[in-house]
Amino acid sequence: MDKRAIAAQVGIGVVAGWLASWLVGGSGLLQYVVSGLAGSLVGGFLLERLGIDLGVRNQAANRIITATIGAIAVVLLARLIG
Image (cartoon, rainbow, N blue to C red; front, side):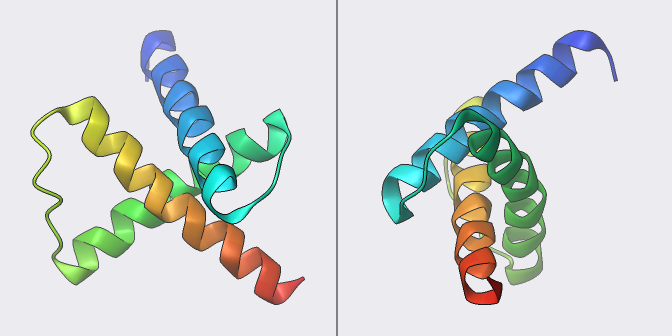
């Protein structure tokens, strides 16, 4: 991956983590990044496995929504475990 792709993924992770924390609670930049990046992977996996198409044509918005869904799942799962 090039540096711009990594920076874009981190940016999407921060936005997704912030949105997830806003919806289910939480705070802290590091938590936003970790939950957003993990959420990106989990959200993509879940939506693909379930065959769900969000219907969002804008690729950036689609990636943010997918990562946010995954980040919410990650945060809720972490709360159940912890």
